[in-house]
Length: 258
Length: 254
Image (cartoon, rainbow over all chains, first blue to last red; front, side, top):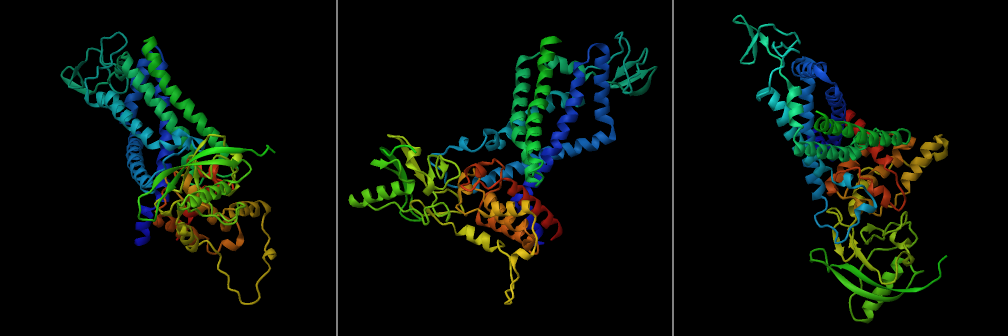
């Protein structure tokens, strides 16, 4: 029992969780990015595909389970990170009068807590912008291409149907929930330059977080060695640059083009 | 080899009367320091000056003065063992500094390394970590086996030797923003983990040594890599990955 308690308190075990949840969130980023890239699709087809994707992401049971694992990972990563940061500080109660940390380590490696806090705030704003708006806000409804008929979640349009309380109703009979137009919300949101700048800044924070975090996750879990270590470092750098860059291009593109 | 010349420097040295006293940086001018002298010889020169002026000399740890014992431990101008790399304080030469330089000299800073006096810190925490498992138990019954009777893969032998070059100076702790002893513990775990003789006690060793390090008050490892850069023996971070691997396997099975 005391051994088990020791494991929960162990710095090393806390770092295993940090690495495991962090690397899982890297996978999540890839999935999220793949979905976002659909915003580059043009015309009605693009709008329909994106909104159908939004339906899939909010109704599919497998996605639902994954999303709970993701929420858990984000929260656990944040709380675990906070506890680790407190322990970090405790180990050196009296600091140096003159220290030159840039001589031996990267700024991003030393400031993961600050970067993580910025990212956490970013996630909250981001969830409010789209997740909350889509679920509980005044999101407009998706209409058929001629703009006349409301649509069901499976993408079929209902000729002569009406929308009442979020349901498609025809001849007094409810046919199921109406598809919402998340695409419209996204386009509208990114007409605001301040929000575009905020999203780009958020991605810069994620990039710096990943420059350290990607390889650090592997290191904490003991997965780096002489053979694969250099490859993991390079892959981490590439991941830290490419993924946030692609994410950041989307709001800028939507601001400039739509 | 650069020609020997004399430089004048300003030193800002941490002075602290005892473990309980509140310390402060004191400023000293030191003229005519030979660029060929080592950092410790310069400190000797400062102490001579202080004694001649009737002051108390700066206390600092030193022993072999050739980079082997791991005794000298000064945080010089913001870096453990000063600006040069792969060297201890005693191997640092005054040619690394220029005439008119101001040099900060501070003790290692860590909760687990309390200052005893001036630049001397209590590093017995490292001894206790070592005692928690950094050894191989051998029953010396009088017919000890020849160590070379057990074949060891060359790569593993080399890596074990590299880990074993750790002199326990504590620069890794001093450099780490979390005052973590991970590189030290990892080196001590690795030097046995890579050898057949170390296998018998491998699980207990890693569990106990890691536990002891945390108990002593050393911080968690943030993988910043500062320790590897500042280590006078160039101990690699891959030892920390190995320790994490060993610890995971040991805690799942023991």
